[in-house]
Amino acid sequence: MQAAAVLPSTASPGSGSGQAQARLILFLLLAPALVWLVGLIVLPHIDLAILSLRERIAPRQYAPSIAQYRTFIDEPLYWHTFVRTALMSILATGITLLLAFPIAWTIAKLVRGRAKSLLLVMCLIPFWVSETVRTLGWMILLRESGVLPAVLVQLGLTDAPVELLYRDATILVGLVYTSMLFMVVPLISALESLDDTLIEAAYDLGGNGPSILRQIVIPHAAPGILAGCIVVFMLTLGNYLTPTLLGGKNSLWFTEQIYTQFITRFNWEQGAAFGFLLLGLSTAIVWLGLKLTGQKFGEVMRKT
Image (tube, rainbow, N blue to C red; front, top):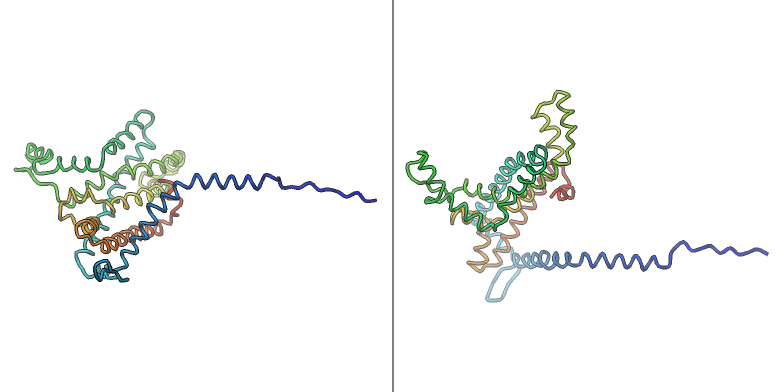
């Protein structure tokens, strides 16, 4: 007589319920973020897309149309402002990178202890107040009756107080100042992970400062550089307050055109179209930057 062998089951009876519990917990943890993402980002953008692709033909009557985008192409002021905003934002991003890199290098590699903490706090101090207060501070410094023109007169550099507001250079100063921290932080994160022995070995092999910077430091910090550039460019491109206050009514900033369409003219269809054009521009510039540098978006975002 053969004895029947009973094989024990390899699956635990509670494993299925355990996995279901884990999925439920994960869903509950992600639920607030998903609600925020869908409710405050996805749905508003869908609504704006619908607005931008319709035309008002009568009171409360609309028809599908791309007339808003044709208006942008046909009106030189709109696309001139669009191109100017893009170029000024790229220039501001480049200047911010050039100024932030030595600061980040100093904090990450040259100072330690309290000095490092002090420098980080000095970078953070301007952000303890709102952007409005910071911009108004620049206006007090640069206006004709402000501090800096008076100092220039006292030093004999000018015969009379000079109006330093409402210039492109003033707008760039404000944009760089308001976005500096967002460039410094990812650069510090990238440079701190650079092994100092690599630089020492490069010097031992006969390398000099520029060659080490070009062949070791910049390639290693490339994700942090691109992360900072992406964040600063998007913040600068979408900035409304700084260009308007420092550049005046003739600042020719595209976000001002969007504000005018929505708030002043109540032309929400045109404003939505302008908003999507600005979104498309920022997306295209970020995609181009990733392609030119050979970086991956996920790796770059981990440095922010």
